[in-house]
Image (cartoon, rainbow, N blue to C red):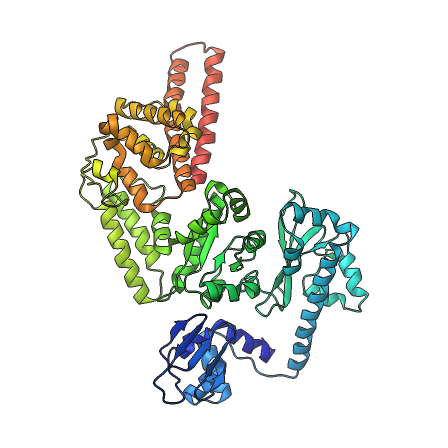
Length: 599
C-alpha cells in the first residue's frame, strides 16, 4: 500500500477503536456508543464517549477528541509515526514508506470513485429507458418498488458495450475501466462491458461510495449472479453489502441480520429490516465478521433451509472459531421448507420471521449440531469420536478464556447426551407442568435388535416433526420392518397423521399415550433428544430421507442376493430375473450416491 492515506484508512478499519481504548479505559455500552471515565482528566462521572460507527472519541469534560491514532499518541505519549507503527504491528500491517508517487495515487483513487459513480448513474438511468423495460418488469414482479430501486440505486446493464462507449465519451481512459472491473478484455485484446443484460446492484463502502457492482440475470441462465472482480478500491473479503445503510439501524436495534445475498437484503429492507447485510458471493470472512462486531456483539446469520445453506453455516463456524473473543459471537437462523427470506416473508409474514430471530440458535448449539448430526452413536468408539471431533473444533479457539468456557459447555453436553445412565430417564424441555411430561415419568428403552436401530430413529423423528409423515408415507410402508412393535407404531403414526391433517407433535404424543403407551415408550427417549437440541424441520427431513435410503439399500441387498442365488442355481436364467437383477443394482447405486452426498 504505497498510498499512505489509504494505509491509514485500512489501519482504522482493521482495529476497533473500542478495543484500543478499553486497554486504558473501562468502557460500558450506552446505545450505539461506549462510555467511560476520561483518561485525560480526573472525573467521577463518565463524560468520555467512543463512537465506533464514526471512528472517534470525545470527552465532554475536557474536550479531548480524536481517532484511534490520536488516542494512541495521547494515551501513550508517542509521536505520530510510532503510534502508527504500534497499531500497524497490532493489526498485522506493514507501514508503507512515502515516495513521490503517493500524490498521484491519491488522485487516481479519488478519480476511481468518481468513475464508479458515473457508471452507477448510467446503469440506474437505463431502467427508465425502453431497453431497460424487461429489467424494470423483473424488479416489479419481485415486489421491488420505485422507492426501493432509488434507495439501493438499482439499475440495468444493456447488452453490448454501451457503458464503455458512454464513459469513453466522457474522456475516461479505457485502462481505468479495465482496472475497475467495468470492462473485460479477451485473448484477442478486444474489450467489452463486463456486465451485460443484467439487473445491476451497486456495492458501496462504509462511506456510501460506489466501489463495485453485482449483476443478476433476468432468466435462469448461469451464472445467476456476477460480481465485480477485486480492484484497487474493492476487496470482496472485506466488504458487506448494504453496511453503509444498515449501521445506524444495527446500532439502534442492537441487531444485525446477515443474509446470503443482495436480494435477501432488499427483501428484508422492504419488510422493515433496515439492519440487513450480506457477504459478496463467498462464505462470511474473518474481516467481515470483524466489521459486524464493531456494531453488535452477536449478529444473526440467516440461512436458507437447504443443504447449501447448512454448508454455508458450517463454513461460517470454521471462520469464526479462531477469532472468537469474550462477548463476541454469532447466532444462527435456518429458514424452513427451503425458503429464502423473500419467500418466507411473503408466505408466512413478518411476525413469524420475528419469532425466528428471537429464537436464533447460539454458536454452541450449531457446533454441537455440526458434529452430532448424522452420526450413529451406538458404540463407545463412536461416542469417543464425536467427543474428539467437538474438542478439536474447540481447540481452534485462540482466546484461552473463551476456549475454556466452550470446553466446559461441550463437556457438559457430552456427559448429558452420551454418558447418562442407559435407562435414559426422560427429562423433558417442556417444563414441570406439561401434561406430556407428567404422563411419561420414567421411560426405559427396550432392547432393540441392530436392524431396528435406523427405524427407531426414523419413527422418533416423525413424532417430533409429524408434518413429514405424508412426504415419506409410501417409502415408510414399503420398508421391510422386522420388529412387530415398530411396525405397529409406524402404521399408527401414518394413520393418525392422515386422519388429522396438521397434527402437532404434542397432540400426536397425547394420542399415542392414550392406548399405545408401551409403543410410545420405545422411541420417546430419542424424541426427547430432538426437543433438547431444538432441531429444525429441514434437518430432521434430511436425516429421515438418509435413513430411509440406508434401509432401502439393505432391502435391495437382500433382493439382489435372491436374484444371484437364482442365477447361480440355474443353467439358464430367465430374462425377467436378469433384468430385475440389473434394475436393483442400478437403484442401489443411485441411493448410495444420495447417501454419500448427504455425508
